Amino acid sequence: MSEEQGNYSGYEQDVKDNKVMAILAYFIFFLPLLAAKESRFARYHANQGLILLIAYFALGIVNSILNAILFAAFFSGGFGILTILGLIFTVAYLGLAALGILGIVNAAKGKMSPMPLIGGFTIIR
Image (cartoon, rainbow, N blue to C red):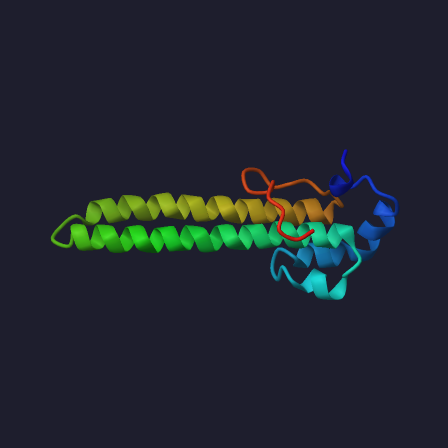
């Protein structure tokens, strides 16, 4: 287990003191950076929350662009494709929501486990 994943001096006390901040990181990623500046545990979850937020924005941008292109291309009757695209993006958004719930559960359990697919990136150290 690496230092980033919870094997550092004072880990258990850090988790005990900053569990709430780590959970809140999935709603307001920068809050732990302000309220728990020295906590590796809270910073780790703030990073995971930020990555999740970026994934939501990226998915939204791709969704908007594809909808605009397909709507313009199939303005006269190709709405079936838009419906299918809408279903695909709904599933993708639900997948991101599931990752957020997983992150919250990990924070509540005191774990520093990366989220599948998107959790391997580090922006906040």
